[in-house]
Length: 611
Image (cartoon, rainbow, N blue to C red; front, side):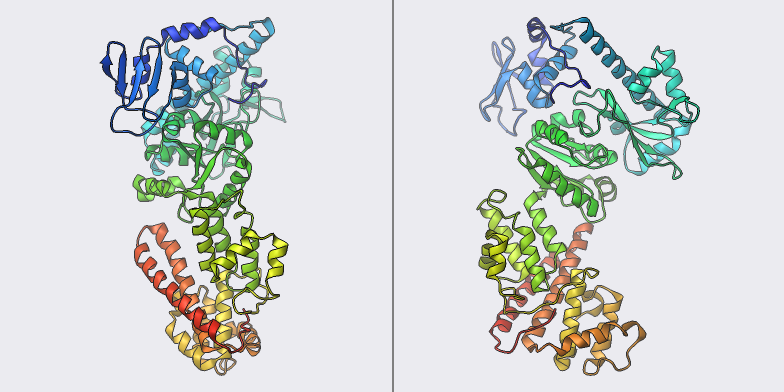
């Protein structure tokens, strides 16, 4: 638990309270909720260990002393440590958990009037939030007004039992339902405001319900106490789409993660916690069987949330949306988690999907498969740099090396099998010797730059032009190939004939240019269509400075096909079909590229191909 603050008073209980709780605990009942126990003697019971996977029971308890021990994994302790480890709680929370379970009243050690009043006020606000959450749940399932919200949740594949488990509700459109009901129950406007449930009009000073006509997601602390709400708009006319409780006496944005109390037991047992983005993502993953999932509460990952995650498990799997924003969120998460005892891994979601959509479209088995296939964060960093960089030019390769140097720092990625595997991946993608890539990545930026000849990439002194910011890596590679076709027209026509123009080129403009050059490579300006009036002359100017060999042209053609297969593999992974055949095609193409490169490097002709 985080250090005590004025926002969340932590009571100090008497030593006698702890002993009375220990006496009240039924150890067979407590442990029996997690594993089936069998008597193994007059005062000993055994069962399968709830802390690790095993087939033969090596876990035992003594119900008299309230102690447990596993001879398999070595864990052991008393009733308090059992709850702390399996529920992800600190000692005070475990004490309160057991006291509530076994009906023991805890005595506060320093019950001075000021502290007592502070706790009473805090408890009143928690009671008000709990009552309101229960009211929202009733509205969702019983009111006619919430019919469209029930339909929306069903359309996301979310079923009633899991929605009730997370206490999802509905705030009606009337401006004073919570206000009026809470007043009748004896709560004041000041308490409603402190709990974040009402707002005050700037025009007339009138108090009204903060949440109206919205699907409500309770935001809870690690014990399940409601601290606030995340509210999703129902209609397209409502802004903002998501409205959270404002920071106040109870709720503090960025201090908790969504679903902690629902996921803590599963995370403690699995040793892994999955971090998703949206509320429905978390609920969908729980429904799919991944009960160790929690979510961000509408904010970038904060140090407090990292601390919460570390309390749950040492391995954190990031299952954030597979878009640009999701990838940036992963990078921010890594920066915040740096220096913490956490192992960050990435769940490889298909591009353009989020976990809830994926479960709905492909079933729970698919998300379980992806979670099992999570990769180390450094692998994600390497793949992202290679995908975003320009591998068709010398300067582009240099920039990729510079971007990856911090990733390959020994403190981040020590020597080992993973480092060698990633070095090979970089070398293969850049078409460079692995030993050379390793030396550059291990050197400081200044010395690495000095070791490379100006304008060269260590691969035959190939010259390069600066990449265009507006063009993708694939477009730059394809334009470079077309310039080579103009420079060697006969070989260029043969190369273009061997390509599948519709698949190997990524834009309509470049496909049109390829078709035109297949017919007019020797005289590219003849019969020039209007749409190519700017591109073809530019390529012809480039071609005038080139002196390529047939081997070089063949190498570039093969690399174009290799890039196309890589794109198709990304799409196939998203659909879950055809990956095997494409992988075989890629393997064959990579072999052909390697052989063509050897031929091109051995060629003594000038190699100043402009890209």
